[in-house]
Image 1 (cartoon, rainbow, N blue to C red):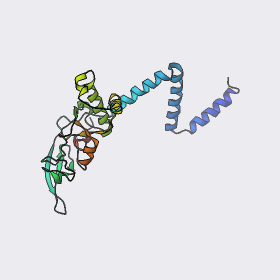
Image 2: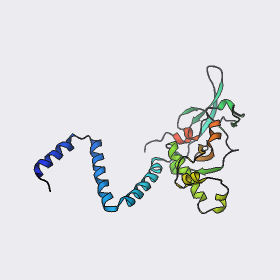
Image 3: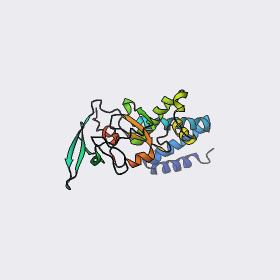
Image 4: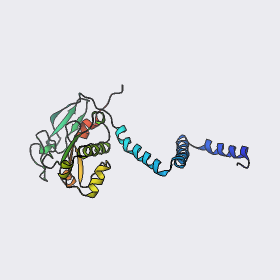
Length: 224
């Protein structure tokens, strides 16, 4: 029981009124979680928070323009070097990094196609397509979705799983839907929504390059 209800209520109100809106929100959330933890138990709450955290990255992603496209054009730098640009349907002009190696290989022996895009096809171990409603957004969120989609392909398919020589840590990352699988990197191909899983060591050798995230993953979306 409160020893002096009126005085203690005033003290509480004085403290509350000094808080910023952000601090009030944090305090309310903390109180709510304390009640939930007490009623449901820590195990149940943890599972709920894990589920919410897993879903959050998907909710941040947006569908792209189904008519999105780009054209690759050439340009000349001040030093006379000829490079390529992607001119997108949403009005952006993006310099293609590494395009000086178009139709050839870079200093690390990684090939680039005729348009100046890096070509990892020789080393790709898996490919997935991002769902149509998750085309635009953070690269890291898309990498997590790619791992989840990859696991859907593997789950219940013993023959397919045998083709991959993943170790325990790699399997754990895949099953947990991590954006980073140890030793591998999700590469955003220039084709919309196409994700390629390549060894990180190979991906690094292909740098610098312009991937699909700079193109379709970063579209300018019009507000409806």
